[in-house]
Image (cartoon, rainbow, N blue to C red):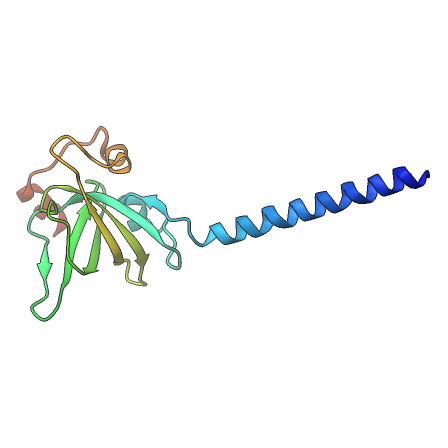
Length: 153
């Protein structure tokens, strides 16, 4: 093999190896920062991972907001009308957070299926709903609070 060709081959191999290593390192670094969206029905079905950050979104169940007397912990239920997930959040909730409104909560699931939220996002205005929540609720009829409570029992 000609020395010049050998040199080009070595340079090409080094570029391929370094590029592969860079792509691998970037992929590994981003893997921990990805948080996927799961509707409550998927969380209840066990499709959501317990050890990774996820987002859960739906409508806040009416009558489900429980506030702690001693700190800023708030517990509430979120539904997509197929499943219900309990979310616990410590901190100040957004001003637009209310019963019957759409929310997206980011956090990790504990062993009991409760989402320990690190962030809660409420809807923006009357006409806005997070795209993930809108997709999860598409084609489903909103039950009344009385009908929902009867199904829950």
